[in-house]
Length: 423
Ligand SMILES: Nc1nc2c(ncn2[C@@H]2O[C@H](COP(=O)(O)OP(=O)(O)OP(=O)(O)O)[C@@H](O)[C@H]2O)c(=O)[nH]1
Ligand SMILES: [Mg+2]
Image (cartoon, helix red, strand yellow):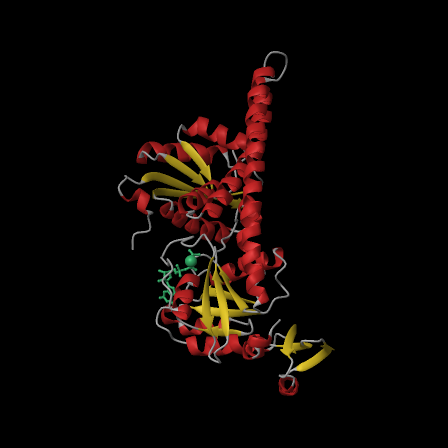
């Protein structure tokens, strides 16, 4: 399957060398796994990986991140392979990228910049594009500060060296700051619109699920399977960027919605998380999270851990989570025994295996969610209140001239049954 983006199909892919780097104390395994993923990211961005190397360091080198010898070795690789780009699997400060670029004489990127580049290519919606631009600006700002400090120390500072550099930098920084402000304002407007839509949905008390999980785990494929939709699902990282919501009917007939959103990845740039807050809010509002895991991926355990850490960071721990182990069709059966998460289900979004059990589990989990709901029974229909009291707990009743207001504990299934009376 072609992993490149349409835009790059016509062009010669950029020739890249990827460099894994980590601290010795974290172990080589982590460096290698993350590097394999970086390679996929480069391919997703439209590049061709023609060389790869890694180093475990005792501590970070503030000037060039890695060891001097390693950098020379990369220089030799570039000569031998005619690489045009070197991508580091760790964030680089402004000083570090500039020093490395000077030494290697090719373009240098770090993992964050690469992910941002993919996002920039993927963003289709107005909001998505604004979010990516914001992330890029936020990513650039600290690099500029460091580059400036670095250049001062390199020049030895002093009279005559500071003025122009500082002014140029200050102008650039001010320009970025004001652009950041403009984008934030625009995003706020989009967000308000979105909130209005959501409020409407909540007024109708439609229960909602959010698909979350590591990138490429099969979230969009599952959405398509459940909702008979045809959203973009591909064997590439970050196929989905903009959140998509589709209607979904539970086996009992209750109407719900499912939202699919951007996938997670290790070392996700923090600016991206901040910029994508609005998108992530869609998941934040869901009643139940559907954590989709690629059971067939050799790095499954690590991927689950990353997603759990992010769930914690976003404060979603208190939401009910269904763990969905996907790609059963191609995972070795014994992998199922490595799992301890509950509630869980094993499926294949591709073949449809286990989908009935999943929808059953979604229904059962929703049933456990009770909410305080206000219903209104017009004059003449008060006998319905007795009917309601047989299946739901009525908390309060208030008589008015036109009918009776009732506050009751309802689960989504009951909400659906009583939808005509929801006030
Ligand atoms: N064999 C197999 N492949 C699957 C299954 N589910 C999804 N895939 C494949 O996995 C790849 C990724 O699927 P997506 O649905 O795009 O994954 P995603 O989680 O939405 O990915 P992002 O949007 O990139 O975060 C596609 O090539 C799917 O065809 C499955 O159950 N079995
Ligand atoms: Mg997707």
